[in-house]
Length: 263
Length: 358
Image 1: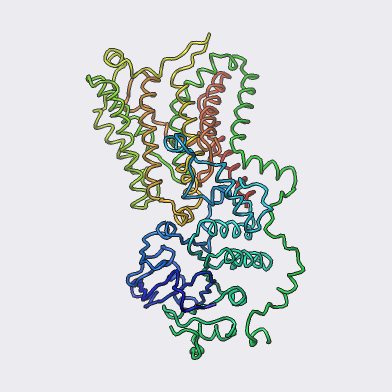
Image 2: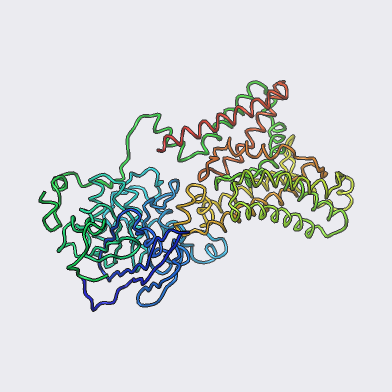
């Protein structure tokens, strides 16, 4: 999948982040190419969640640069990243349980009615938002939803994950970041979410997948970024490396030698 | 293990079996459970049904005990009595929806009334005096909001503090003197507008009562049909999720307290009309009265769910109990007893419904 001639859609160079004396990112690099699913793995404390937070705007790095589509970007809030076209599905899903599926998908970016109703009375266009939400869920094969107005708290874990992925896919014009999407799910539901991820890639949106689940990472990812001690250790091709190699690199039991890409 | 050594893409055995399993996981089906569960579901989706039912039963009940209660006179008295509480309950609902609370609403109300009344009586044109009173209320609300959102103090602590602060300012500003009814009638009769009304036989529907319904409609619209209203709900439901969804939580929170202050400032005008004068020690019980109304109306103190209609009904229910019990010849303290019991029952019911939703 890796085509060195293609410019990365999202990349980072030399990201640093300190929390007091703890160095969470120590010159981390990162590259995501168009149309791929990039796995990000690393041991606990390797700093991968700080990296992901920097990419999604939740953390502002102390040093380093990020480029999106060739242009340098700086995100000061998740909203900035969202506006730039990067959607993140957080592990907690970031959904409001009492609000409906459609309301959650549009939270923070509601559509208003055209004309005076929208501009003066600020009325939201619920019919159009509901139709759009339904269409997006249908696109991802979640068509068994009966009531788009039903509260998210009435959904199961897998269904909520499905809605969160659909929200990201609907609005993530450039990049979709998925943080541990299968961690809280059962076997069957995980399978469904992995299928969803492949569906999203099929629509041409590149995906960053953070996961501890090696079989899942190796099944869906085109490349795997191994994070260790606050920086990128290597990027491996899951077709040429085994899961045990990946775990060995990740934990420092083995050093990468025959790499596809040097860090 | 072959799965470990061989190049990957190997689906382990248990996953291979899954191919035969039912694929329909993310199905959104109707679960058909017992009658009790379904009633709980209906109540959870339409929480306003509870206060509406309680109101209906209590009106009928008091009508049987004291037939005079069902007369237009008594019912319109109830509405007049609860007008000011109803207004403040609307402000309180918006705050409580964010999982906050505002203990200073009563002080904001009275201080705004004093500013409005003093300015109007001393010759400032009426619209200006009213605007000044409302601005004063908004400023106090804004102060609460800034402390809650920026200093990140719990709303209970912030408004407990500002309750005393605003109270002190109120006593200092008024010099512990009331604005007399005679002065208001002579200098600024317009301040009494909301105390007037339309006579229908024995009943009088005040403009204040009508305004309460209008304000309730506006608040309902804003909370349910605008993005801001949905953000208020999301903020109370799960503040972290709201922040990650891109809602500017600080701004929303500050605006909520400011809007509550604005409503209190407007209510100041209504309150002057209702009482006819302004006393610095009036409306002492309205803080707790508004919270009582909101809670009886089915709004959850944990935020995120509740309704304006419920809060107005809650205020009316308290009024019905007080008037009904006094018409039935029950002593004052039993009226308080009834209001207290209603609050506890309402919160117990809320907890029960929440558990049903998990």
